[in-house]
Length: 314
Image (cartoon, rainbow, N blue to C red; front, side, top):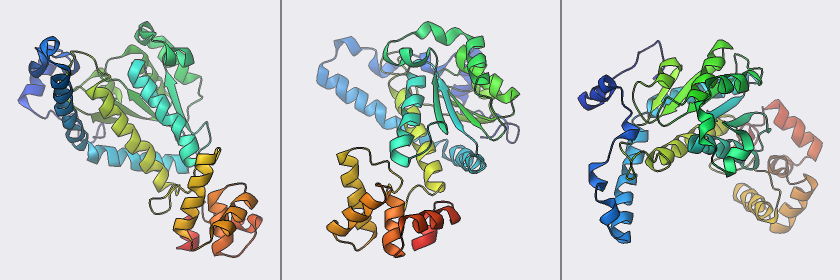
């Protein structure tokens, strides 16, 4: 929910108990996996599968707050704002993955969705978990980005208390950026300083404290929803088709051709010719065919309609 409008809501007596004890749900032992080391491989797989079923239900609990946040992110990006994901360890890597994939999927500029990982690129490939304890480093890294009020910063931390992410979100608030906390515990330090709290309570992990499991899955699901929904609302999809994909290899060129033929009643030969003329910019190729115009005219039409294909061809 949004901070300062409805406050921080406690959802159950059990959750209140965690708050009173100052503990994170992410560190609890799971009673269903106490015999983990005695189970067969099949039994462990079945247990983990059962636990993973709880993740989607936990994400569903924050869908209203998530939709409200996405609406604000979309509006801010329409104003020229940027979306930042900040995290350490698994949480940070998931943010980087989601940010990077916005390029080939939606042809978004590299500096519009940015993943920041404690320790930088090196920490993506080799764990450097000690770096997450540096509050000042997180704050300094965000200040390097010259944040503006139209920017949005999502801090990702299963425990909700990672100092690097706390530092980053603190700096973001100081610069007037909109902030959100994606956490897997209640009433955490991170949630308390964020404008939006996405508290996805997946419960204790099968392997105690290993938040790369259910917590990581929940984070990935939420990040998928944020980036995909924002990009759809920005006009980067037509129907459920990926019309802004960046066709940089043969597989993606074939996908562009297939999407073109899904949208338009066009032969393979003609579609390939138009795609080549449009340098595999799929939207332009579709407009060229549907409006019987050249590439420059197609570009102009798209610019006039904020690159929204639906506005041009219906």
